[in-house]
Length: 237
Length: 237
Image (cartoon, each protein chain N blue to C red):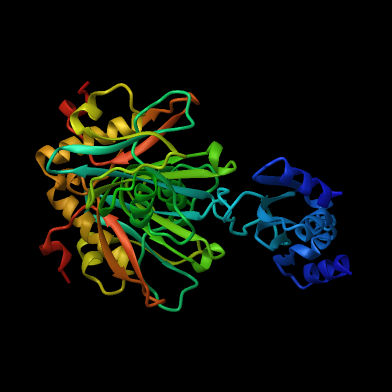
């Protein structure tokens, strides 16, 4: 029986038990719950339960705590105009940058480019990260936290063809007008001012640039975002 | 029966069904799975299943995709030394900044300060974000993505009392030595060079500063991280 097994594991000095349950065998989750197991996480066709047997409160790692939203501030440097949208399903119509949730496994810059294209039909290229916000107990995140990142993008197409399901309006708006208007969300307003500063005085004033590095063990690459470092520091050994 | 209910919901044109199942009634998850339901997520003593009835692939939002790790680069500006640790349970001993996973609902800066204190006994204060990395299919994240943020912290205590369970070594190390050593992880090495640049030429060269804003609907505050904006831009209306 599971009760007997748990008693034995406890005697053996084990600190934790992990239980993987296929969805079709879910009655076993109820059986395990009677022995003190609780859900760690579940996805698609399986759940994972844990039981802490060690001393004190559980030291087991939790499951993913954040969703990641990414928006794109697409600036046409020739005209000084920036791409903005209004959501279809909001009571108050505020201008904001197009964006949406990252898919599992998707890079920040790729989410920005994809979401901008899906919402507005505009093609663009990732330039930098401009701003990061963390918000907790997010209503659209099933009680989890939300990270929201706004990227600076450069457009490679200019004809708007916006998604009627998601957007009420979509425009190229003068950046200075966006920075001054009251009809923008506070984050949009702040980032518009930041973008205007960069546009007028140099993007090096506002960019959080990206560099790619090889990961130590996996042979894969990762992207590190930080302020630009002069050559002399970058190459010091 | 559930099958009958699903048929009716389909006829009524509903696009999705959400099912909340207490862990003790988990056999219902198996019954629902037979009708095409799958786990959306589960935590503690309940699971949530979904069934997409709309056209095309599911447009339901996914569950949290990221865990958040935060490390603290604690620089003693009087001595030019920075706080570094070596993990106890690693085969190769590389210097790195103390840090760990964010607890649910915890702010970035608070995680950095807490983890530094837990690992090293050093008290510190949040100054800025220095670097952000996103890595996918993270081995320690149950296949989910990992966001890893390094913060600049200022120490308010200096006597090390490090956690023997987690750390093999903990030292105040000369920042320039850390920037040059081969015995540091690549991210640590990059951030050490960045920190040295800021220490020598001004932290405004490296900081991603934080400002707090009221959230529109909730009355709560959120923190926005970006490059510092001059007063003239900040106050424009």
